[in-house]
Length: 500
Image (cartoon, rainbow, N blue to C red; front, side):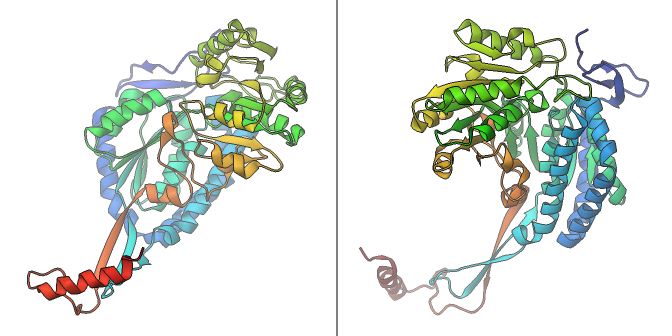
């Protein structure tokens, strides 16, 4: 039986929808479809709570965030089970994403004051009678629209940083993972019971659209490029700023001097873990011709030990969104029809719930499997004459999210040449687990950054203040300024800046 999508049902107090297990179609929860009126009411409540939350200051907010991460940590098995119920992923994988999210909560709360607090700035000689400071003030209310593939780690990358910066948040999780969203919001409300600082709204695209147009001060969205463009268009009507973290087609470069065992292991894990449903997952590999055959052999051998399923021995679970199955199958079929070879898997690897690993070689660069985001457990491997060709091909895409380089001598150089927001060297996806590093892409992968100092600043507005310390001997901003003053200023500028 083919898995079905969450669907709305009639309810006496309004429309609801069921959240279904992608492994069994079992109903694991029922949630309201929040209307535009509901969303606007939530935003109004968040607006009322914003002054109180901002008024707690950095230390007060950090204390609440510490208590929140404590609740999550102590109840981690329960959270992981909810993630498994709604996504089908292994408990161990649910724990991994949750552990990384906890690290981000800790980092944001600890560093918000240092990053966003008042800082002195130099004034320059002409304005030396002034003191200058800048600080970052909360935006107010932030709307977060989260994805289903990493329903803990990804939305918390926006929620946590927005909260640490002093904003209240209205959070719409994916319709595939409303239970995870509710669990996180309920855990937060245990430690912040006074005001609705973090609220949950559930539903489908219409609910998300209501959030975008509802008067929030910023939208943070993670999802497909197509949906991101629609959100940008809607947000433009009210000049609401947005952060877009969209799709990816991440490449790995394997140089002639690479540790092939490590590179092959990273490729297999990065391509197949979480059923390939990872925006920064590995979808393309470009390998130096001198080590290509050996590398491919290692990948094939390791891939044979990887299996999709819901039993304890399986390495990853089902495809969460049923409509993605046809996309994966179409990409594999197109690659093979155009001369590619499936050394592992193939079209028959795509079932009605699970997709077994597929390793493709000799795939044309303009094929769907190379150019479009597959978002499934597949990977293409291509031979290149050198790393210059590898960089050129890796960059020949509309996406630019993550990437990886395996090289003992040229890792930093090659990483710097890749047109992506993040690159890991000699390890897969490591940048995502380092809370101090910004996360985001370029091109069709979106713009803006979450995580790190840049992530905190995304959810705050800079406030510049200049204060006159004493009256300047030369009045520049007055109609009483004399001609001799202008002559003196011109001479001063020549001395300071006129040298060849």
